Image (tube, rainbow, N blue to C red):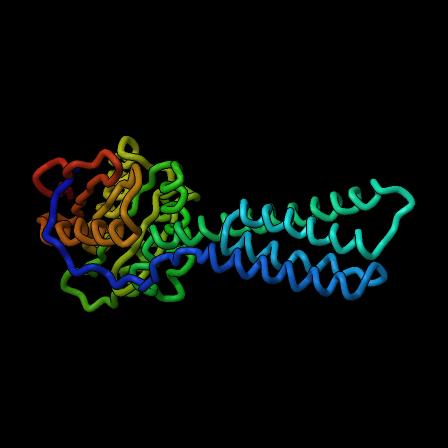
Amino acid sequence: MTATTSPALPRAPRSRRAAPRRRPAPLALAGAVLLVVLVGAADWITGPEISVAVFYLVPVALATWWGSRRHGIATALLCGVVWLSCDAVSHTYSHPAISYWNATVRVGTWITMALLVSALRAAADREADRRRRAGGRAARPPARAEPFYAALEREFEQLADGGPAFTLAYVDVAGIEGAAVPDEDAREAVIHHLRGVLRRSDGVGSPRGREIALLLVETGPDAAPAALERIRAALAELGASSGISTSIGAVTCTGPVPDLNTVLQRAYQQMYFGRRAPGDVTVAHETLGATESAPAGDGPADAE
């Protein structure tokens, strides 16, 4: 099997995503300070008999979410100063240190809130970045293909975070030559036959028409040729007994790829080369990744 370049195909439709908005930190910090003043005024008016300490959490969370962790901690310290001032003019303790201890406990609670909100915002930013890098789903697949594409997205995200390589393959089922056999019957026969050579961890999907999608997890450039050869041999065996003609296009991803659409399109391009090549079962394969320069080879590999 050798890899090949192919003419550009129309790009699959992307889901439109707005560019991440810059956090309005100055405005958020100003709003947080205003809220601190308002809560402090309420604290001073109500006196020591009614506690409003929980409301200081609102400006702390606001400053952290729309600003940063530093803004949240600074707001928590400001809340401590305001609370201590209100407490000093409205309450007398048996020992002066008690007021400072109570202020320290409250500030610790507010700082903890700032740290939690900061961690939550960081997780939300990472998820938004992953979705942006994935570029959304190339096209909305039928319900029967949803689990397959969900698994493919997981592999793509893990690869972007330094996870193992994977191989995506598309199998085109041309049907039984000379016989009016529905695509559905031929496709189901191919899927049933392929399950005998695929690992349990591999995925099989049937996105549309006469195509079958295969996800070979933890299958890098060294293991992909052997795995694709097993698939080719199984399809050749099926073709010899039933007359079903197939072609395979595959892409092995070894490193960061711009988006998931790129992987899907390149696999489709390789499958189109297989359709045009002679032979009962044809395979076209290439590798994508950080070290990718150009696919090796002059054309798709043909086999019977």
